Length: 281
Image (cartoon, rainbow, N blue to C red):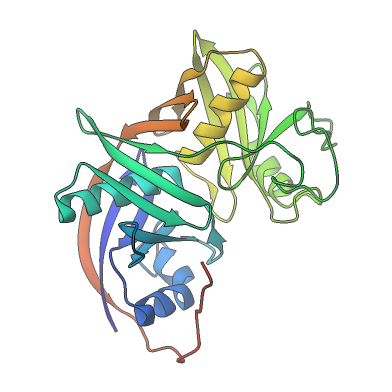
């Protein structure tokens, strides 16, 4: 099967995008996701994003992590997909249905694209956690400070510390991602205040590991910073790859930043069984 794709990134958080895939294409991509995401044997990416027909929305969005697992949300990826689709459809705004809910994205001017990540959820059952707990002050042991759990389409665990740069992310990230309290695993963020309404964030993404940026993570971190009294609702989040602006409004959490086109191409995928790679998203 010949598969056409676009490679894009948002602040170095990079994606393979397949626009308007047929069901056989979706099945083949799902089966071969690990190979496609491999930076030595495939194209290489943090996530694979697939759009497919889904009226009345402009498309359905399917998100695969680099380990092949399904993800409910991907903020930077959504902005990249929106750039591709808005160009194809000659629109300034699009609507996508995803496993994490309905997403709206639009041109924000000056090369920026915004996406409404929706309303955060804080109840322990909506994160979800393995049992009832205070999601504003989670005790995860390991001698760590309390964390805040937030679902912004996918589960996040945010630690506020004095210096995010000093955290041993490669060591703590995988242990926290798979902590027993998170039955669906979690994205792990460490934040510290570096200025007025300005925070530094480092991230371990569920199913991808350390990445240079994470849009949903930046959104969750900005919300956590506000709830902890560290910032106002409009926050600049500084990541390894650059800056994202997050504004938590009554309409939802709006995340804005740059997107970049890297290249487009084609790859030949081996055939898959007729019932392989089925997804219920």
